[in-house]
Image 1 (cartoon, rainbow, N blue to C red):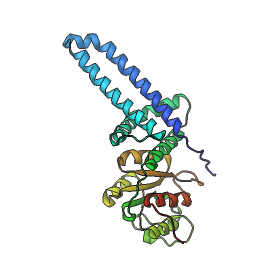
Image 2 (image 1 turned 45 degrees about the vertical axis):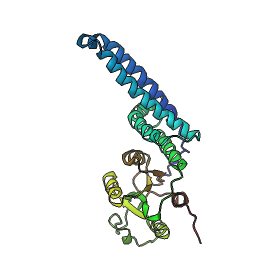
Image 3 (image 1 turned 30 degrees about the horizontal axis):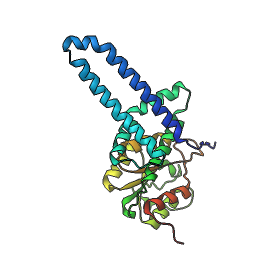
Image 4 (image 1 turned 180 degrees about the vertical axis):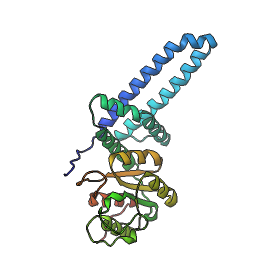
Length: 258
């Protein structure tokens, strides 16, 4: 059965993270308020010290979220905002998922929105790398399920029969001179990244794996490309090769020469 994936919208994740920030601020203030009498017994300065710490943390998160909003609007933001923004996202991400559930918003839809937002922020940086500094990372489910030639150890095992897109990806990687790795899970993916030490990654995966992967390897720039699942999840998946090639070209700052 063909899985239809709707076009992701950046604003969904942005709205949810703003709501998360408001709720986090409200509960932080409420907890601080009700704890004042107990803290004051220990020291008259302690309530204000705790309040100062909580207020500082909230201000830093607000600065990060503000940086994301400004970047989406096209404004150039200082580099230090990027780290703060990602720290804010990592802290508030579980809450955005919970709030999304309360409003009956599908988790994968929120993750797609996050990936689109992340891609937008990375594209705005106009990152250009050398071919040997770019890694294409894709899960092994893109290989034909019954193929006897395992390609997770080495792509050269692929016979390029056309039954799946491993051959297409290998040919594209050869043409542009970039790295290509097919991995069986997140642990191996992180190991490949540590080994190759790319300056940029084009990651192909489902919503869940892309979301966790992008957060795990920050500040390494990652463009996420969602895979297609005509046979359901984790089986004979496919990818839009045109989108993959366009992303490679943007990272390399070049176009294909026929």
